[in-house]
Amino acid sequence: MEMENILNKQELEKVDKLNLQADEVRKTDAVLALELSKKAIDSAQSIEYTQGLAKANLNAGICCRLTSNFEAALQYYDEALRLYKEIDDRKGTSRTLNSIANVYLNLSNFPTAIEYFDECIYILEKIGDIDFLATVLSNRGLAYQSYGDFSTALKNYLQSLSIYVSEKKNIPYFLYNNIGIVYLEIENYYTALKYFNCALKIEETDGKILEESYTLANIGRTYIYMEDYSNAVTYLSEAMIIMKKYGDRQAESQVFSNLGKAYMKLRCHPEANKFLNRALKYYREIGDKSSVAHTLCELGELYFEFNDYKASRGYFNESLTMSIEMKDDINEVRTYMGLARLYIKFIDIDRAHHYLSKAIELAEKRQSYKELGRIYKLLYLGYKAVGKSTTAKKYLEKYNECFNKLMQFEEDNCLKTFTANHDFKATNNNINVPSNNLHSKTSDKKAASKKQVA
Image 1: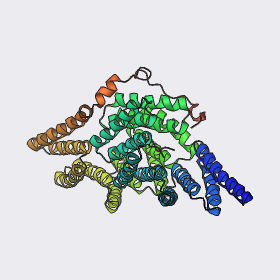
Image 2: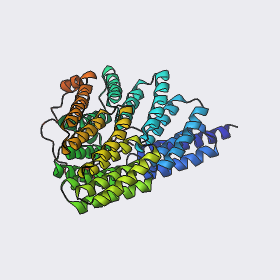
Image 3: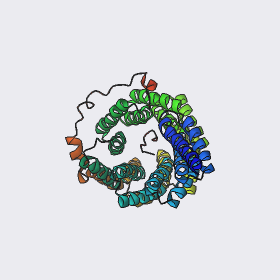
Image 4: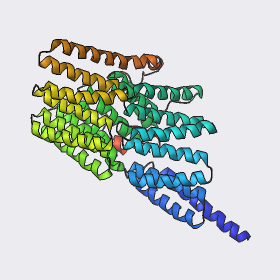
């Protein structure tokens, strides 16, 4: 009996060691970490070690998510969740729920992601796990933000910030990134860059190379909006080098998409077309249907810019069909706006108004003032083009109302005070172009313009 106990203990320790190795290795090699997790699963199953088996499945799911194999990730996570609930391990359950939510966030299924984050937060509040609660609040904020609800997003970020401040802990890089994206979305680009560069400095110090690539991509995307396309291409190219090395296909696809936008603005049609089609190919391979619809819409915009209106309408219609089938409100709105631009070009204001009315209904449902502002601006330009000045003025006023509401978010959520009191001295002046050796440094988060913790 004593010998049997020793053997059982050795088998348990073997599983625990494999899980620990997988935890450490996945920071630099997700493929190897997955192999270690599979070995841990086999060993844990053979001795009926439920705790170790749950952890191994969770690890395997994280590895699959890091390599953009979302279907496999969800299968591993579902098994981990079942096992953790079976043994009433609420800490393990909360980590798994957060991980599942992150997959749905990656797949742009924001309502489902929010549901899992809500369940996770409920458990964390019950067990008093304040530290992880701060992380999950930041993740949930990103889901609301991606869904167009900036007000709720900022409330989540400020709740997360208050925990870090009250616990006297350093603010983590991913929260800086997420707040930076808020400023990017409300078109306060210089403040966005301050936050992104704060995140980048922490990632460089901590050797989180993969996370650096996500932040570099965020900076590149910001430069696109600032119409500094040369800097955008530089940052996005650096991000892509790192992502290729680590096999993060979804993040790489997002960079291809943004490079396509940058080259489109530079009037380089062949390069823009190449990068957007590469993004489309990768998104289809990893099963990210929402991003497929988004990229089809971007191709519609590309062909619109280069006056191929037949091809443009074809891409918009394909995107719209996919978006409606998936009940993807965000891409549906984006595509309605693309089609409206097309019809405004040909002075068909009635058809444009038809599409934009549908877009307004969907954007209002999510209280997405940024989308509403863009829709009203299109209506203003359309009615102005056909000489209906009174109607055009009405939509210009609506556009200004939406813009003011976006600016008010900062005031209402006290974020402006936090920004004003924060020390940006290390990063707020000259924003340097990254050197070519960034990818040689060493780094479970996701993606270019998305940040969350597994």
